[in-house]
Length: 333
Ligand code: CP
Ligand code: NVA
Image 1 (cartoon, rainbow, N blue to C red):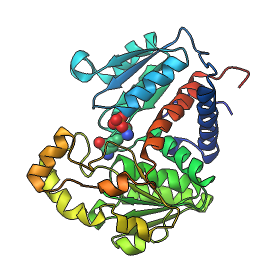
Image 2: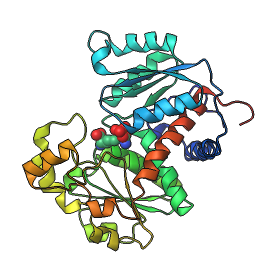
Image 3: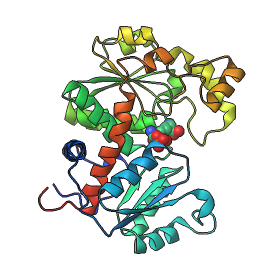
Image 4: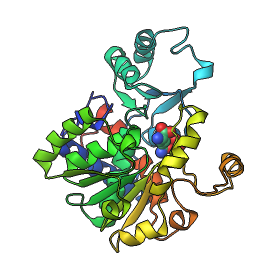
């Protein structure tokens, strides 16, 4: 399979076979890294990392993955560049495309990363937009495959705001890979009907099913994977917290939820998570809402069933696979 020159903007653009190919490549790169086998086959190349929102995992994954491949990185944050304010995305794309072999972009609307890709002339990778988080999907699928040995037939339940990047992307990933996706949340937070329709099309081909329910007991029954994300995403106004806490608290991942799931069920979260009061923002939340734990209890987060750190590590291996596949693999691979 040859993915050289391709952008990575949303999983909608990738076939199930291409997704499996990237997962296999990531597993291979992970094994090589553990064995200490060098993979610096792209020495002399450079990539730009644009972050209009904050990041720990995605930025570090791109940096470490690139360095492992022999690639230099330049990090651009919104304050220290001209992007979007003094200079258009199209002009930025043409400038960066003339200096770098690839560009990562994390920001707001999906149309921005699409515009960047249109003008860059080099592969552009989506490091999270309001609508999609495709590199996170590869890490999640790899983690699920590592735990269950397969993807087909796995029941994944997403609890929380399913209209945003994580809910949208998980629905696409499950629909493509023949998994059973359940959005278990208040109706208002179901994904939009246009995307549901697109995913119904993928599901017809893959044998996946899509379910939308407000009923926690029914929705999480016998689930293999319970997944949640923050209730308020980056870039959303602070004022929405109160409403979200009220409406999404019934969909908090608790021990009871995990007990209702399958015996071997795992818990996943893209992170960062609100599960304790140790962080500055956690303390603030505790004072404001008398809630130490939001979308998941500390008990579940710290349990054996929680695979969130395996998932986080897999961000790096899967991002490395995307960079390698789209910049071109050496012949021996
Ligand atoms: N999951 C994820 O994208 O984490 P960061 O925001 O830390 O990159
Ligand atoms: N929905 C979250 C995901 C963080 C990785 C956000 O956009 O902030």
